[in-house]
Length: 150
Image 1 (tube, rainbow, N blue to C red):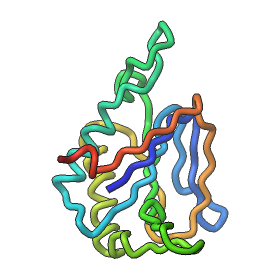
Image 2: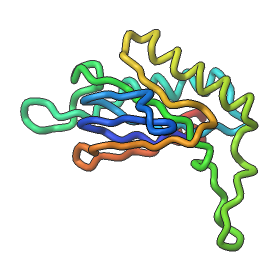
Image 3: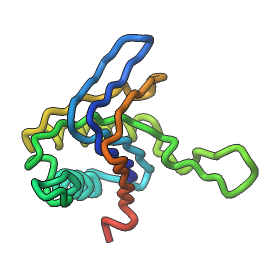
Image 4: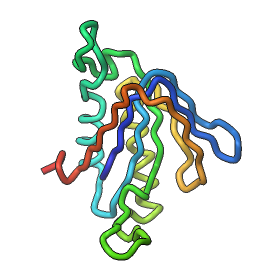
């Protein structure tokens, strides 16, 4: 499982020109799922995500979590996080999870973040989405379950 996390001042996602998710200050999270992922891995990734101290405190140090900063989440599915570019110039996506399984885990991740009392907006799995954001920093982090879950 892979999360690309961007600290944002604001972010939104639209499908067919209609905004379906929008947040202010918080985290935009792109989620990639592999077939080998499961709910236990998702739990560890969500725990790490929600506890990351990447928001500035009064001294300008990144000491605050999203809960401390009062932020929101926008969660977007993105199978292209499993692009394999080792051969040729056209990426292969065979490492990405099968759609039914990936969607199940994506929905699970959203529900688990909500269970922690966060406001969560999200995209539409499998849809052609347009994502807009104003990155705060810029501040972007990659969480990979191969490194987080040992």
